[in-house]
Length: 502
Image 1 (cartoon, rainbow, N blue to C red):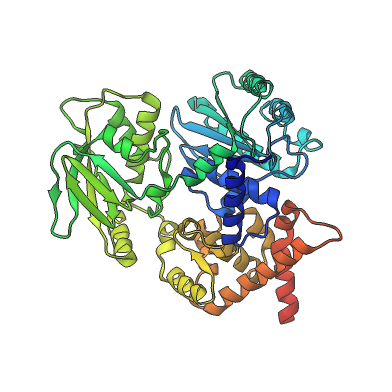
Image 2 (image 1 turned 180 degrees about the vertical axis):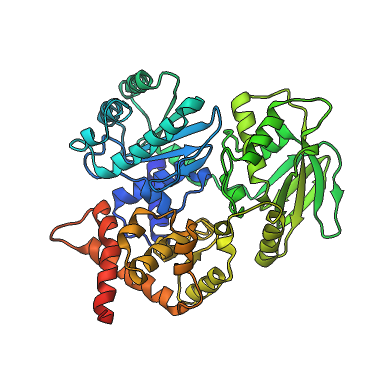
């Protein structure tokens, strides 16, 4: 007989699946749900979540795997991050079973695969007869990134999650976890291995954990208030670290959704920030030597040296924020007494926020690609697609967080892949580089420009989605998810060619 928690979880899954309009099978949707809850604070898009799913026979007991460096996702086509000494590499491995209990076999499979996948003496090619290509591609991402940073002694953390609809875990199952830890430590002796069983109750709790909409910053002293309701304040570094971290000490990534630049790793400016943080000179406060942080907010109020910020978005100071986060995460600097300058700007609407973003980021050299989401063409596409019932994810994960139907959300990289596949007839290039197409200026300019009729973008999306539905329904032979991923852009290019007789 099902328990109350299992009944509630099943009801929750059914409701969310229906609300999102998902066509996934129950097992597949359960895994997507679990993975989304586990990685909620890391703000992955649906495209990014799906890229990490590897369950397809030969998965070694791993249903999905993701590698992060200093909280930045590394994908198959990503440029390796040149992190600094003691950068943090997090590997998230998720296993889900749409069953009413936990078994020993899934963990035993993880132990066996860990002995292969994390043994760097075994080449990827030598493992192809045992494991599927999606798993090996994502393992290769981890291996390359780890070796790229090995000389800088990165902090390596493995996070295993085993989820089911069970309500308790038998001691015999729990004992298997030590064997998994020992196996990984045999290959990475300094690695930290965390393992968590996600019961029905825990999954419900994770799903109820909403994004933080309002958070307080404790100030050094009373702030300066501006005529438009904003504030300028001096904030102790530790208090700022607490502001950008959740209760588990993890970075709140969605506070940075509006920042137009990615964390730049060990570039000159970050090296300078890091050196300033690591050199504690009592005669020089940190905010004297740093431009500080700019935060936009829908509202902000002050009382008792605490600034309450509603819907905070850190639009300038991402590099400083990441360095402060890494500084406290790695060094555990509990005695830190220095401060950082924080500006809180109240914005009335999206257009005002974009003006602040562009203005506050103009002081440094920013690649043109960084401003792309704010280009007028994307606002035009967003408005046009909305009228057609589609949600253009110009601001990453905005519509995902609004619980829009999965099949109605169109990301900028996905649209870029479709357009490149058809108009430039490069489906192989588009498939291989989902996250980097729009980072190349020449590729970007050929995909998003006003010479392309705006209705063409919609038509191509419509054709692509129709092709993907047809491939999923194809019976002879039955195509799995990786196979569909490999051919869907080729099929769309071919279909458009036939339709236009090109």
